[in-house]
Image 1 (cartoon, helix red, strand yellow):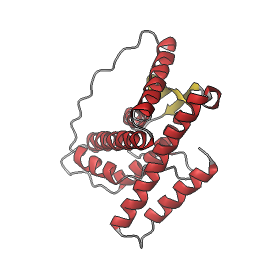
Image 2 (tube, helix red, strand yellow; image 1 turned 90 degrees about the horizontal axis):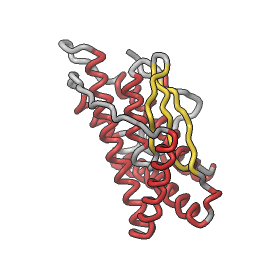
Image 3 (cartoon, helix red, strand yellow; image 1 turned 180 degrees about the vertical axis):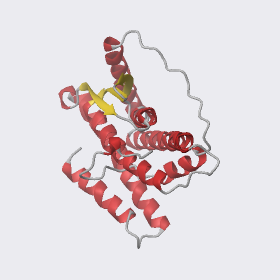
Image 4 (spheres, one colour; image 1 turned 45 degrees about the vertical axis):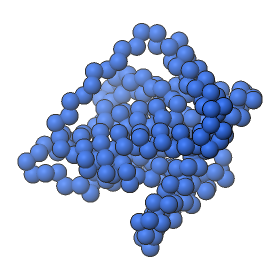
Length: 233
């Protein structure tokens, strides 16, 4: 992402986080930041349609470590899919190596948002009391599942709105072609993938996590931290 665009996003988020900002103003600033991220994705897609060399299909591996490695991996997948990236989860030590496939600009957006959302999830969990009758790990896993599900819905909506505002059906065809190319690249590397079985979560934190997902900033990352290890037990 260009420095100019990143500067705009950071400024909007700083305004949204100002204690003097009303909830309505904060929501407006956050929505604008999310819109900029989505519009950037569409702009890069249209540019690449004219000049493919500006945005090649690629891949990267993101290490996701304990604690709650599987839940963090789920959050990464929830961010990647709406942004037209695909990921394969591989066991790695006490965590996972998430192999991401996508166009360079979309991989950049995924990394930016995932880093920010991990920080926000850690802060959100720290502020939510675990019910006394419930195991803390079970509650936090269900909380993270709710957070990830709502974030995915919000990102998908922002992406669809940006595509509609930029040209509707013609843009949709460009984006669909990009998704197909990413899927083909993944299939070349992993021709025999299996779909993981759905998880069964026993905790009661899903609703609280979903509410935190509705409040989450979807516009950018915090500077100077690596939150991939940051959610406490």
